[in-house]
Image (cartoon, rainbow, N blue to C red):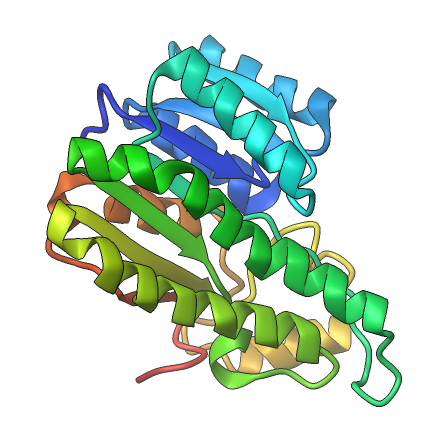
Length: 247
C-alpha cells in the first residue's frame, strides 16, 4: 500500500488512536495534517513524522467549535492544496447513568464525537468531489454497535457515526469517494487506562483473542481503508475488537 502524493487530515491526532493513525499514514507516504487542541503534543507528533522522513503540519483546533474547524481546514487546504483523506477520530467521554446524566454532558459528547465529524466532512467534500477521489474514515466504537451502561451519550454518538458513514457513502460514491467506519473495541489508550483491574479482567474474558487492542491495530485498518486497495469498500463498519462482537 502506498499513499504517496496524498494528504491526510486526522482529528484527535495528539495522542492514542489518532496519533497512531497519523504516524501510520505518514509512514505509508501521505503528508499529514494534525488536528487537536494540544499544540505541544501535536508538534511532538509532527517532529516524529519529520524525523522519519515524512511531512506533517500541526493545526491546533477545538473540534467542538465550528468556527475553529472552518479556520483550521481553510488553513490546511491553503497550505497543502487538498485533503484526500479525512480521519474523524476526535472523541471524548462523560460517563454517567442516564437518570443522572447532565444535559451538558450529553451535548458535549454529541458535539465532539458526532457533530464535529459532519462539520469536518462538509469542509472537504467539495474538493474531493472535484478531484473524484477521496477517503473518509470515521472512528466509531464497539459500544456504538452494542451499547454500554453508563455511556448513553457516548454510545449514541458512536452509533450516529455509523449512520453518518452509510449516508455519506451513498451521497458521494459515484464520484470515487469512499466513506467507511472503524469500530475499535477495548484499546490500550489514555481513555481506557483508568479501567479498574476488575473491569479489565471482565473485558478480557469477553475478547476471544485474549488481549486488549493497541492503537496500531486500529491505525493499520485505517491505512488500508485509505488506500487504493480498498477502493471497492464503502459504507462498511470494520470491527477491530478482537472478536468481542461478531456478526
